[in-house]
Structures are given as C-alpha cells and as structure tokens.
Length: 341
Ligand code: TYM
Image 1 (cartoon, rainbow, N blue to C red):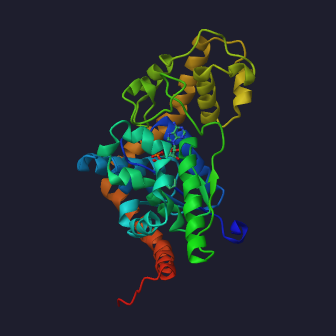
Image 2: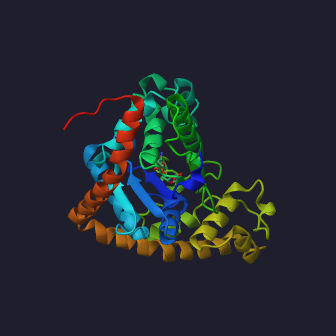
Image 3: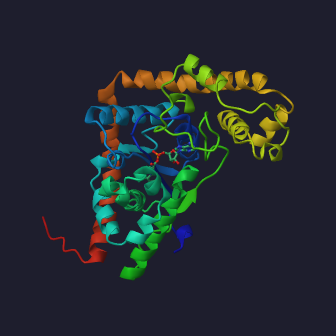
C-alpha cells in the first residue's frame, strides 16, 4: 500500500468519559493543535460511542462531550481549519465498524491489553462493546481514509490492530482500498504518569484525584497536586540517564519539558543538582501559567453550550460528507446492494 500516494490526512479521537487530564492535553490535544497549525488536514472526534462501552450517566455524558469540545477549542483547535465533531452524529463510523467486526478475529481482540485491564477479573460481565471497541476505533480512522493518527503510547496496540484490519479487508476482497495507517507517537508527553505512582499512567479513571491534573482544576489545585506529587529524596541529575529507575522524577521532567515545549535533556541540564523542593514550585508556576488560560477559555465556552452544539453539528456535517462515499465504496466492495433512492 503506497501511503505516499495518498494525501496526508490526520484523524484522532478522545473519549468523553469524565474530564480531560493533563495526559490528554500534553499527549494528544497539544499535538493535535501542532498538526493543525502545520497545515495538515485534520479530523478530531469526541468518541461518545466509545465512552458507553462502560456505563455513562446520560446527563454526565452530554456534559463531558461539551466539555471535551470546549477543551479542544480552548487548546487551539479551530473548527474552521480542523473538523471537530462527536462520533454518534456521523453514522458511518458505526456502520463500518460492523463490517470490521466481521473482518477482525476474536483472537486479535482477545489480545488487547486495554480490554484485559478494563474488564479485569469480571470479564463475563463486560459489555460486548468493550470487547469490540478496537474495531470501532479502526472504523473511526479508516472511514476517512486517514493516513496518520497522533495518539499517546497507550493506544499503540489499537493502531497496530487497525493496520491488521485494513490489511485483511484489502487482502480478503482483493482490493487496495484502506490505507495502512501510520501511528504518530512522538515527543516527551506520549506517556504522562500518575502523580502518585510513576509506574502507572495518569488517567481519568484513577480513584485518586491527586494522581492527575484535570483541565478543570484551578491554580490552587494544580499547585497543590504538584507540591504533593510523589518523588524520591535525591537531587535531580543533569542527564536523562541519571533518571533511570526514578520514574516519578522522569515524569515531572517530561511534564515540564512538554509544557514548556522543550526537550527533556535541556530541562534535566537546567535543574542538575537541584532538590525537588526547588523544582516543584517552578513546575507548579509553569503548569499554572500554561493551563490557566486553557481552563478559563473552557469555562467561558461552556457558558454558551448551544454554540458548542452548533460547532459539533457543523463539524459532523463536514465529516459525514467525507465518510459517506468511503462507506458506500466499502459496502460495494463487500457485495451489498444499494439501490434505495
Ligand atoms: P482516550 O480518551 O483514553 O485518550 C485520548 C488521547 O489522550 C492520550 N492519553 C495520554 N497521553 C499521554 N499520557 C497519558 N497519561 C494519556 N492519557 C491519555 C491517549 O493516548 C489518546 O491519544 N481509544 C481512544 C480514543 C479513540 C481514538 C480513535 C484515538 C477512539 N477512536 C481513533 C485515535 C483514533 C481512547 O480511549 O483515548
């Protein structure tokens, strides 16, 4: 498959299950904005159909969807330059996902570590949607013939599966139809860790609110969480090698670098030999300076929810125009008669 021959088109998504975290902001949103600003055609989706693979209170789902939209815009996504919408408004995602449910193999989905983690010991009671989720994710991307997918490290396995699904569809039907996508997992922030434990990912589902910075946190909360972040007793080393075996220190250096748009090496060199008692207040000031404008813009946007809904509706209209012909071609390839007028 010659991806080079295809126009570069970026697609990515974020679940509206709970609020956005610093992990989503640095690992995804900030990178989406950079891609948009580089002039790459970009499609960004708030994946509400994914969110309901685990229970969501309808009123909370609506709020989280609008808040995520506000987060995208406050972070710098411009709905006139990128397509921004919520997944359920474009029915082609769910329809292509059905074709992919019939392409993907049980064994492939059974290997997904995220399913194993989320379903836990109670697998029999997990929703069928939670198991089938990666086929929907592949459909999200491939229904636009997107070529590049910026994500954090935790989504890598799902993107490998997307490549397998595209390859098997092309092979089974003897076509060169779906692109074999490129994951884009780059920079200091592809895996932001919990502030309480440097070995687990920062996540909206962690029980401890102190483990994460939420994009809705005010300056005091941000500073307090950074002050209380778990660290070790050693001074900071001047090089990244010196951070081996010190996951919490490594994480705070990465967060500093990503917020300040610098390389982690430079940050480590700047703070060589300093104690966390000096580093943490600097990190807290930086985090507040960078996040406060985003949070206040989100709050401002949330005051006009009808406007957010209008933006999502407009984006969905543009997305549907791109997706529908690709879905129709996929149905034709699979042998579905489409004669309805
Ligand atoms: P979700 O909603 O869990 O996360 C959205 C994006 O944020 C990234 N991310 C992180 N990056 C760095 N450090 C962290 N601690 C961190 N936490 C989250 C994720 O890697 C992701 O890029 N299945 C996806 C949503 C999805 C999707 C798609 C993504 C659905 N369809 C199609 C790309 C393309 C998910 O649950 O992301």
